[in-house]
Amino acid sequence: MTWLATNPLGQALALVISVALSPVLFWPLLGIVQDGWQLPMLVRLRPRVSIPVIAALVLLLFVLTTWVLGPAHVEGRLLLAAVFGARPALWLTRLIVWQLTDRVLREDAADIRNELAGRLRERPVNANKSWPTFVFDLERARRRGEYEPPPI
Image (tube, rainbow, N blue to C red):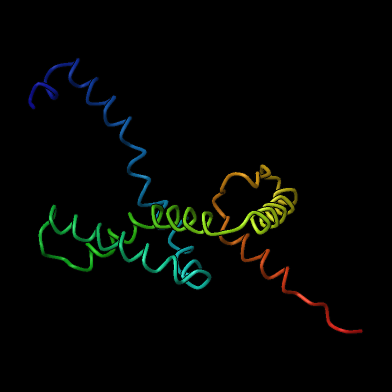
């Protein structure tokens, strides 16, 4: 290990390794800022799918962090499990909901997303492939289909 600190080649190698692994440090930030707020909304929209997925992933990560870090600081390990489990939970829930949804609803959700994408200058989506906000667009499509204008 001292070779990395004393040898210029080792120092360069250590720099390359640290730069290559630096995106891993942004995973918890994405979990807190981008993904954490979506979990309660996902549980509200699709509780039968999202609650077991989130619970299983957080429990798995909690057990792994307990195994690695030891039994102390339960709150910190729960926070780590929730932060690191947010993105996989969203992805897995979206995948399961995608598989359970019929083609017509997928196309309606894609139409809604493309309308929003046009307004927000985002890339349009294809109804044949899932996209990050699929579950929320699916709920918009379901509500749009149930909407009845008030009588005049």
